[in-house]
Image 1 (cartoon, rainbow, N blue to C red):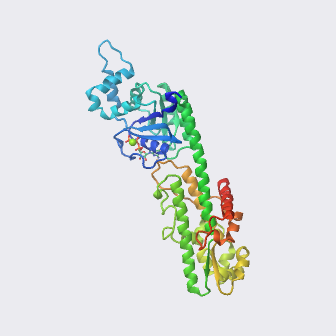
Image 2: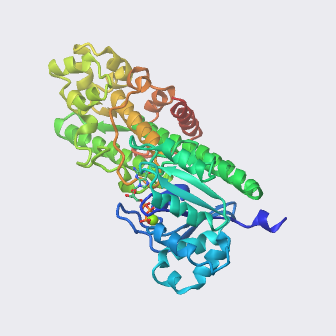
Image 3: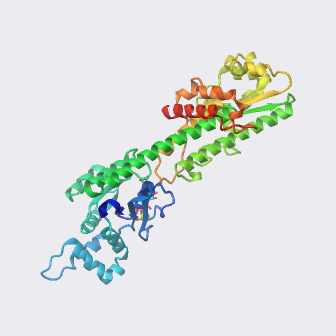
Length: 461
Ligand SMILES: Nc1nc2c(ncn2[C@@H]2O[C@H](COP(=O)(O)OP(=O)(O)OP(=O)(O)O)[C@@H](O)[C@H]2O)c(=O)[nH]1
Ligand SMILES: [Mg+2]
């Protein structure tokens, strides 16, 4: 193998200050903790690198650099470095500059950037596409171009309504830069990374095999992540569908059991949220409890509040409210939970045949003695909606995003109204499938099989 085939491709991320260079690095490395990002200029003061490897082989090294601030003055200074009768080319002139004292004083920050670009195979020139194409940016590009390295302009902030992409395309073409990628580091396009690496492969033919490996690996990882996510959601739903609480008929333990079940479901959902955030390499606070109303007071009574369910468009059915009005189904109304025989009787009185059918046989048999508390269909639908919404948000989110995820009312009809997937109806009959029940047997083959099936449904819809 030649040296170029095994060595990592080195890229310097360069550009004006505050255009999102560090943010681009965060998104490309999927590392929310990389460097320091701030709305103030001159945040990055030193060159900092990150390496992307596949199977232990380093393929790409990305170097964050300080933002350029005073390119007009620097270009003037560079142009005066030629001695009488001399006309240096770009790299020769930069070499003279970097040996001189101004490179350690007035232009210290700029010198760091130019040294890094000279030591790299190419540069990613990050642009704030909302900015007009000012003279300072043209001078900046002239200085950077004198390094003699290929430059790929990256248009950041392209999701902003104020973006001026056509102006930038034209200005860059006039400077001989015809390849360009759009990449918003907060909301990157789904194929953004692939396009970026493909454009680089056009500029750097030698590096094509490495870049293609990187593209293939990222594609594969995306698939694996999505499947793992679907499985996490699937496990949450099966755990909740199979969850049961047996309660004695006196009313006090019944209340306690409702509280207990609620708490268990809420905690279980929180766990799923955290697992998804971790899987997608985001911080736990990236879906803040306020925005994703969660439990332990954090979700308030939201999850089990019929109003919330209605707001989200989850159909609870007229029978439930009617049953409650008949007196016997109060707990059902309050809890969104099917509460054994009392609720069942209430629901039947109110005409909630749907509810009666799901629990009838099992619960009627228990009218004397113990009662069972399970999680209602509507709650399972709500859990599914929320988690799938979170998943879509995570898939579309760049690791440079600073705000936390906001979840709107889900629009999805399938889960709201249609019948529950078979896997969940099966889970109803298998209390041992739920982590939330005592004597859970989570490794049962049938449970695993149903979880896989449900995960497929989650990915498809
Ligand atoms: N909405 C939006 N904000 C962004 C995007 N990229 C960066 N920002 C914000 O722009 C500001 C500057 O981002 P940085 O990544 O620190 O920019 P920088 O180029 O590294 O800045 P210096 O290190 O100071 O030169 C921060 O407030 C970022 O959150 C983007 O694509 N969309
Ligand atoms: Mg920075």
